[in-house]
Length: 572
Image 1 (cartoon, one colour):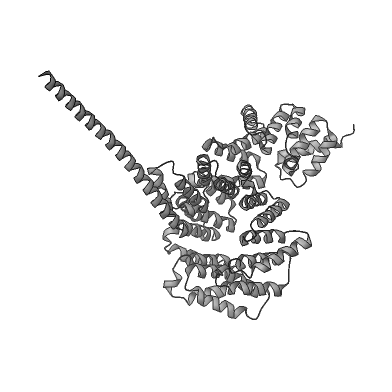
Image 2 (cartoon, helix red, strand yellow):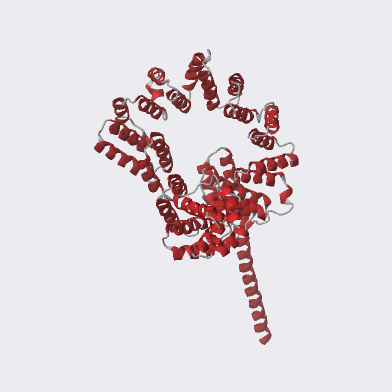
């Protein structure tokens, strides 16, 4: 009996362990199956997104990439796609995605270089420099590294370094015609006649390559125009360019422009040829009308449009191009009539803007203000984000300065456009020398992006210039300098903080730790001269005052430079 019970117990235990093992096995199978499913979906969706990108379908590519990130937030492939999509859309979030990829794959030279290129695209030169510094020794021997370094040198205005970097890229990858094109284009800008001629010869040779002949010819035309070259040669180049199978409508308009400028007998016949071919594409037709409008061919443009059927005439963007013709002619009544009854479904904000212009020109201030208010509200509502940029360009063409500023401040409320709006406002107030409004811009930027070190530094520097919130400015300047002491901008702000505290020798000491090429930058040299003069080193101060010539400075900075000059000029 006892043996029977023991046997039953052992059997029960075996069955229990078998069931438990089966459950564990099932869990592992399910977990592994889910992992395999996620990896399969990731590969499938990433491939699909890449195909959409090749077709320039950013919406589909973004949708696929975001789906991958929902399934697998750590997907590097999806992060790379999101970065490229953002880059193509000129969205600064691309930098965050590139940083995320590099964090996940810190040994990937290709991804580090893509981060550097992305940083150059969005004018984050310090970020680009830091990224290039991370590249391994082997990575720095590649052509792609030198090509990226050349792009950074171009952004920094270092023409000699740019040329040497492209030359090294060509040496390392002699079959890369794209690098040759860049080198030739850079050499065209050289003041050395031999270098310039070398650039011409290189680009002329590339004109034999079907893949490079278009950009090479455009570069030669640009150089010829800049150097007031032979009109006959420029016309010949433009004629070749517009004859290429890959030529664009812009290339054809360029040839038309040269024929017009040189009073060539073929101008009228070529214009007629373009008029006929333009009717197949609304965008081409609008571009032709724009050219005619800006080359005193307004009445010809109107006669040409009147011959078109309403079906062609009403296709966007032709109505807008026609409105511009009336603006150029100053025919405000006809403009008002045209836009008042028009139907611009996706561009109604722009229609209201043109109506505001027509009413203002007819001294109807109240009506104009009403229409402008509607245009501003619609453009900045978020329904059509690109509308803000379209409206902004229109306002700049009209020189409606006050309205453009209103729009930029409205754009700053849209997350996708905040960065560009703040950058435009900063540039505008900097050019105007309006330090107080500059401070307002960076204050707004810091409030919305407290982790933006560049904005924090700008706020500290401007606060010290204006003598406002100085305690916080001193703290910020020191914190950023301790975080990144080789950043010349941060170093100059920290040294300025010390200067404001009366610690002149220490300010000079901070600046002395910078690289010579950084100290020789005009704006940095100006600050260094201020500190040296305050510390009593007149000789060095005079040297850096000379190096600061051409620096773009605010009124308060100019006053400090003048004070330094007075100290240097004062008798001992």
